[in-house]
Length: 212
Image (tube, rainbow, N blue to C red; front, side, top):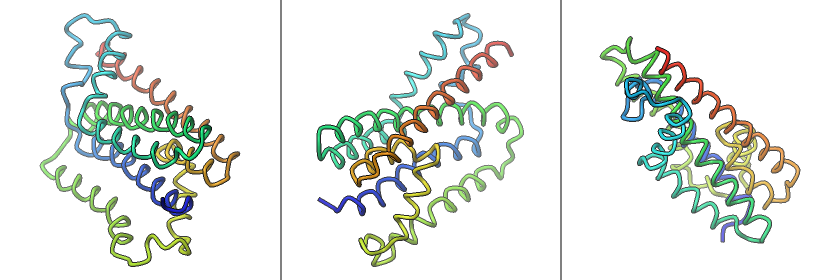
């Protein structure tokens, strides 16, 4: 098994990068998808059933399933003791829910505010966003010492990313496993608040779609 600090310095930035991509790409593309709540406004479905139904349906999409695979892998990586294993499972669920809600909220906002004004250059802009997001990862991959336990670069990135809404869930078991129990529990709180705020945003967007 990889040393805890090395595993942490890889797992947290990767999870953060995935969540950030699922936030920005739908916003930039601004394309309506099959789970756009505006598509269902004519069927008279009440707000609660529509918000929950579309949210659950979004969990079986390819992007979220890919995130779930990554989350399961992280559970295996951090299941070094009973307490850490429980936190790893909770964090994996929170990380997957965060990404699923980011995708739903980003798609709804992008389709509503970006989609009607999208130009033919939007595709190029989306590609630019992906390239900009991928450059830091690529630069690390091409360095021979990017997984060197003595290197502190990735550890600094993990330290910062773990306090963001995109990386908090992924950092919880990593911090606890590396002895940062207090930080891990605080980041668990950040992850819970993030999911709650995203759920509220999705609820508000569904309500706005039904009232439009």
